[in-house]
Amino acid sequence: MKKANLLNLKNKAVDNFKGGFNCAESTLLALSDNMNIHCKYIPQISTCFGAGFGRHGEVCGALTGALMAIGLQHGRKDSKDLNTKEKAYLLADRLLKKFEKKFGNIRCSLLIDCNLLTPEGQKKAKDENVHKKICSNLVAFTASEAARILKL
Image 1: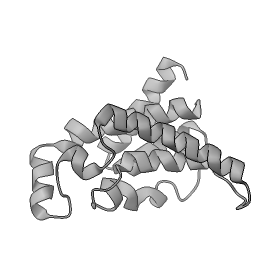
Image 2: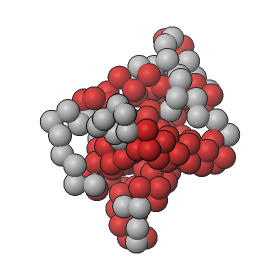
Image 3: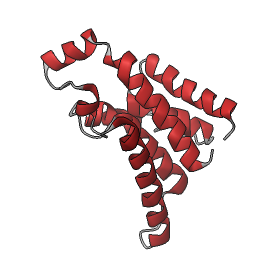
Image 4: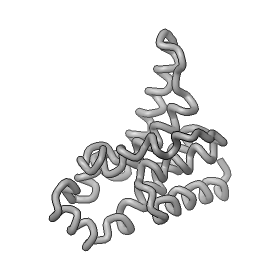
């Protein structure tokens, strides 16, 4: 992917995030648009994956959105197609390892140091502006790394 296109994709993902979509929705939207895959269920299929599975602080939503995009391009349609499944798993592993190497973890709660299930954690996230200071960078990095892996 050319640098200009990669920058556009990163900006699109961050703009989606700044515009109110969660991390998973933002990443999936930017990547699927770039792949020219349009489906009435995008981004809604990714909504519950934001904030590490609906604020549970598990796997970063930017990652889960990108993993869905990998599935859109490399997912299998036949349960017996083990080669396609293995390729998708390999691509997922590559993305997860890149993310973990860059940020030290893939768990939302550890990345943002907040428990979003509690009012105190939500207040801390708001007061510390984690969406802008941390999450926007996670969305940008993940969208661009997924694009590289997908060879968009």
